[in-house]
Amino acid sequence: MGSPHCHGFVSAKPNAALSTGEVIRMLRELKDWTQDDLAARSGISAANLSLLENGKVKIGKKRAEQLAKAFEIHPAIIMFPEYESAEIRKAA
Image (cartoon, rainbow, N blue to C red; front, side, top):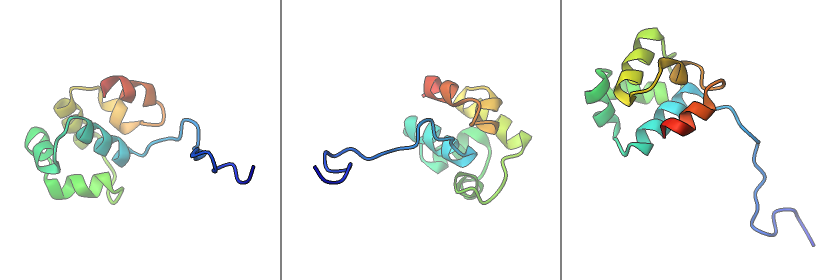
């Protein structure tokens, strides 16, 4: 029958861990917010949000708390995405 991809299926890693930046971007996009929207809600500049989303800077407790408040979620969801993926799905 050919390759395993011939039926339109693409293999994926089961429960692939998300990075902190991916979690921030995912939550922001699920709320249909731009980085500027999130900046206004969190007090973190859009430039720093971009750096966070792209994994260029570490999150830190203060920023995690600011983002958690903006998203109305627990900071652990942002700080420890590998342990909180089920909670991220619920928050979305």
